[in-house]
Image (tube, rainbow, N blue to C red; front, side, top):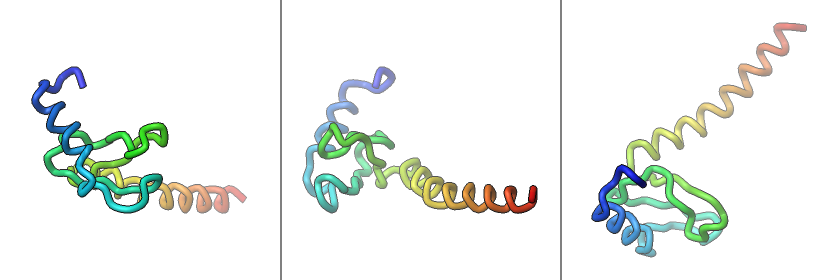
Length: 85
């Protein structure tokens, strides 16, 4: 927030407010905006937390890391546990 200029912050906020950038239910929605510079954005209902901006390469990278990384860590944990038996 502090390193970005005011104009980009205004663009980010304007993009966040466009209903067409949100897909799905309000409590479980997907955000996609190439003009919004943020990778993590507040959810449509802000008190529900944050979501990824899949219009940014960093957002897609985070999604892949979560989807691939979590199961990989679980599999490695099981393999390690079985090897110690």
